[in-house]
Length: 113
Length: 122
Image 1 (cartoon, rainbow over the protein chains, first blue to last red):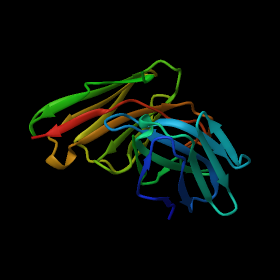
Image 2 (cartoon, one colour; image 1 turned 135 degrees about the vertical axis):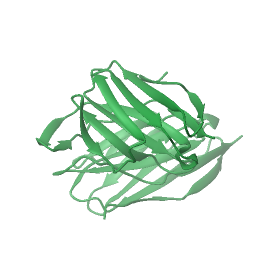
Image 3 (tube, one colour; image 1 turned 60 degrees about the horizontal axis):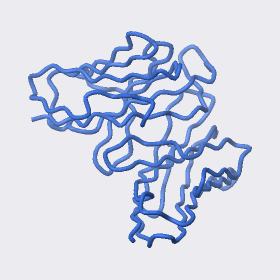
């Protein structure tokens, strides 16, 4: 069964600090991995998308890494801001069959001033 | 502002009411999706439309009836809902990279989500 596990479940950091969120998956064969940011009461917003051949991708202060061999991804947030407080969701899609992405349960990040 | 527009933002309805949720996008995307999201849980896929045809129905009860009248619009008709149907209903769209088989979709394109309709069933 395809699974996506995220850790930690929740995280509290001080403004200006860096943090790293983890995503492990069992989806196979692998197609792509996406990180989304979801603010409370809003829809998810795409941060990065990586395919098999990509091992790092940046979007401003967000940097995602992918190790397709170990089936792990991380999202690193640099110099956190109060507006980074949100849920971060890892979504993995397979290939060769019907398109049904597998969502992780998300990491809830709170940035304190 | 999101490029996928959902209306209404909030909806309160009784179990005997009939209502509809609406979703609109003008990005030229030919794949559109309905998700249901409960509090502190990830979105759960309900329906997928590809080229205005229903491609995937994730065993959703018949009290939810999707409709895709054209390539820009996606509706979700609601009738005789239950209190447990209270949730945030998200619409998303994406490009369709290619059709793998006639009954399957393969897409590595990102999904663009609307802000959802928060539905409460009394």
